[in-house]
Length: 228
Image 1: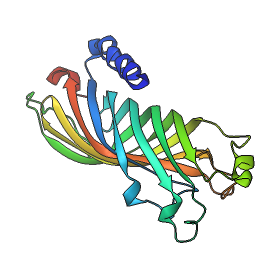
Image 2: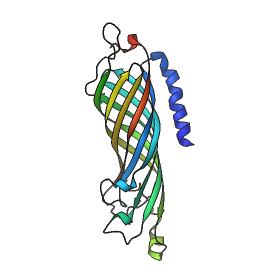
Image 3: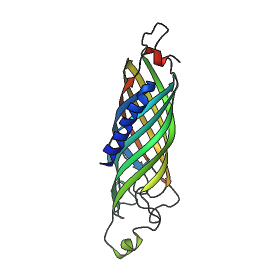
Image 4: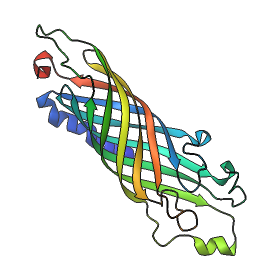
């Protein structure tokens, strides 16, 4: 429900920006993963879950795009994936709602139209970073023992994070009003409580999560609006 509300607000903003025309709105669908106290490897392939959402972008110039996004995904971790911690018996699942803004640098970006007003398809890699507010609602499960019951919940545990996304992607402007892309990026959370485990795990190493997937966008505008 929160994602629907966020997406509604994002797409309503399209109509307020549409007068400027250099606007793109689209959808994201892909995967999410996490690294933390309940993950052995940097990316536990077996714990990869679904992610989806939407975005609204403003094409500032041929090389820079400003984007607002609302992404939702699922992450999980399990001690059974670790040869060292498999007897501890912790596992968790979590819902991740991310509301963010970022700037994309289109490395080979160029004008969408030539001097004759003809659309020019283009393909370019890009880099992006920004800031986001993320709510991660984790459900931690552990063996019902006196020791574990005394450990949780941890005093500083939180569900809300300010994160910094760092993404790499590919963007293909295949026809005049449609774009197709793929992107993947890590989210630095500056916290060890994504999985609700810190002091009972490794408090010296922060958790992070990632989103990756495909984007499909619709660009509002005409040749006159995209000659910079």
